[in-house]
Image 1 (cartoon, rainbow, N blue to C red):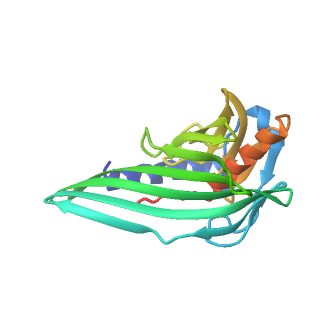
Image 2 (cartoon, one colour):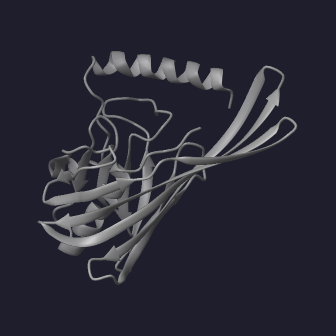
Length: 231
């Protein structure tokens, strides 16, 4: 996609959404079944250090590495790969249950045609989940099958949870260019959601078993701390 075209599209969509929301911060559009299960997020969120909390859950000892990039170029063709790692300790009701270690990657190919530059990039996220006692607990992996819409799956204590990007805010009719959050599903049923813009928010179905609620919370904390690495 051309940089100029993408910028123009983003500005147009942003201007439209700004008028629709009357300058109010955008909130993610979620399944109606989750409406009463919203938890606000507090803490540094996207900063490298500190503690993030929502409801009775928290992510502490947050540590994020510098972003590193390598590039190779042959004539007008360039390949760039960037990566960054982050880790944190997850706790439920003050008790540490998981240690999460993640790596974010961004791979881009670009072609220069005189003053015109055409690029194509893909995001990825891979996380290893370990119990407080050191035993393996699962993983979370996301890739981009569709540009700017990373999706994937988390396995937590043997339970698969689908991670689905959501591109639309409340009371809007158009998708954003980047996800505003993610929906979490188990066997096709909505378990929770996480808004990753405007301070963040988390929804978890309170009628679900406690173990599933905890799994959803681990996924939510991981996604709240995830940052895409566009070059």
